[in-house]
Image 1 (cartoon, rainbow, N blue to C red):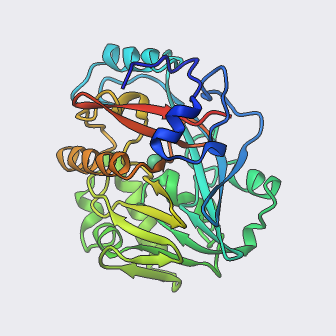
Image 2: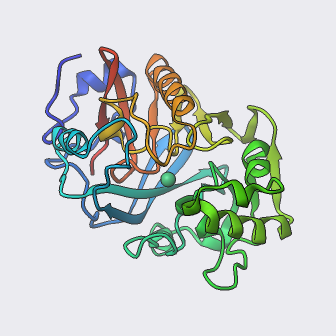
Length: 320
Ligand SMILES: [Zn+2]
């Protein structure tokens, strides 16, 4: 695999064909989609399944030496620059995907609900602009219980459910870890408020379905166990016809960092070594099976492809 300029990368037809990817996914663009997209919704297909990427916002996180446990701020800045991204802050965009399967809407995670960073919380606005009625979301597959993925399930002050009629599907491991007796006391200080909110809200809700193993959770969608980021973190594999999409959620987090440095352990990874093992296994599978991959914190529209690059990876984002 040649080293490609990612800032001005244009995916060639030959490359897309070699990967067996759907060419319509790739719309060449001159710049990496790192700043606010002008249109915060984008549709593409995986076989018969329609995928709608919905932009929630971006956290322009100030650099913090603790952000990556085994890399310095200078190293993370260098990785951002090498990917053609601004590096005066850490860009953490947030995208939510909705799958439309046989006319029904299946959403993966719920975004931040404008309760994470002031520069995020645009999921509903972009959902409506994309022609999807939030009341028609019938199923929500939850990857893990971090704020940017679940605060969009609950109203800011009342904690009342935003999707009271949707089925909420999550791995039993994730649910039981966060709601275990005594968990809040054991959480690090920075996670205690999150733990308290989860325990005050979720046990009262009756619309959860818990999944014990890897299994189909919607037509053509399989829950894949991907622990490390959190104990029960899940990815979701979408299959239709001969096309596949791995919705990886936070396994590869910000790929500008973790594609060239898959061994980096983020402060956000609750079990760093397990997160690294999961990341390598999932990316190797995506490459071996020539599939597209989505990530919640990939540059909007939150999708791309990976290739092997020695012991690391090369990430090519879809740009629009
Ligand atoms: Zn996240």
